[in-house]
Image (cartoon, protein in one colour):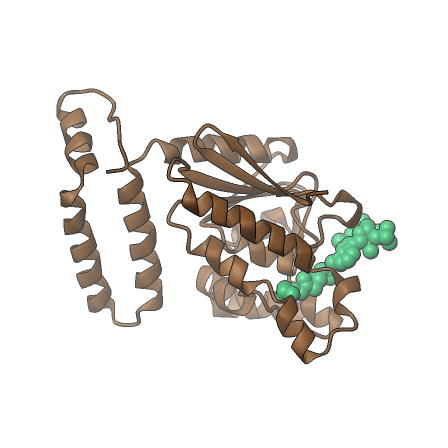
Length: 255
Ligand code: CO8
C-alpha cells in the first residue's frame, strides 16, 4: 500500500505522507516513494505549484525504530538528502502546510519548501541531539540560511520543540493560521502563485537562491541583471505587459 500520495487539483500538486499510526514518521521506503512522485511533478509541465501536506501531523521525524541499529554505512544509505534536494531544486514554488508535529527529518522536509504555513497547534523542532544525532537532511544548512545562525544554533543545540507562534516570530514559518485552515490557506496561496508568469517565477526563485549562496553581492546583482534581461526573450513578458496596457488579466503560456 502506498504511503505517499500525489494528488493534483488543476495545476497544483499535493504530496502527502499517509502513515498516521506513526505520526507520519519517515522511513527509507517512504522517501523512495516520495522521490518517484517528486520526479513525476518535475516532468509535468502543467504543474505550477507543489504543496507538501499530510493530515494531522506533517511528520514526526525520521523513523527511530528503523535507525536505531544502523551502522555508519547504513546511516548514510538511510539519508533523505537527495530527495530533499530535488524538492528544494524544483523550479516551481513549494509550500509546506504544517499541521501537528514537524520534527527532525520532518521539519527538514518542510525547510525544502519556499514558504511554510503552520497551524496554530503545530509543534516544530529539531530534537536530534536528544537522540544522540544531529540534523542530517539539510537542517544544519537550510535552517541557518532561513532564520540566521544564532537562532538555528539555539534550536538545533537545545532540541526544543517550539510552538507555531514562536516559529513565526523567528521566521521559521511565514505565517500561522487556524489548524483546520492550514491546507486551505496553502491552496489559496498556491492558486495565486499559479496565476503568475511561470518562467518569471522560476527565474526569481533561482536568482534568490544564487544570491543567498554567492558571497559577492555585486556578482549576485550582475546575475540578477542577466536573468532579468533574459525574461524579455519570453512570450509571457510581452503578454504580461500587453495585458496591463489593455487593462485585462494576462494569459501566461509558460513560453
Ligand atoms: N519514529 C518512529 N516512530 C515514531 C516516531 C518516529 N520519529 N514518532 C512517533 N512515532 C510512533 C511512536 O513510536 C508511536 O508508535 P506506537 O504506538 O507503536 O508506540 C506512535 O508514533 C505515536 O507516538 P506517541 O505515542 O509517542 O505519541 P505522543 O503524542 O505521545 O508523542 C511525539 C508525540 C512527541 C511526537 C513523540 O512521538 C516523539 O517524540 N516522537 C519522536 C520525535 C523525534 O524525536 N523525531 C526526530 C527523529 S530523528 C530525525 O528525524 C533525524 C533526521 C535525520 C536526517 C533524516 C535522514 C535520515
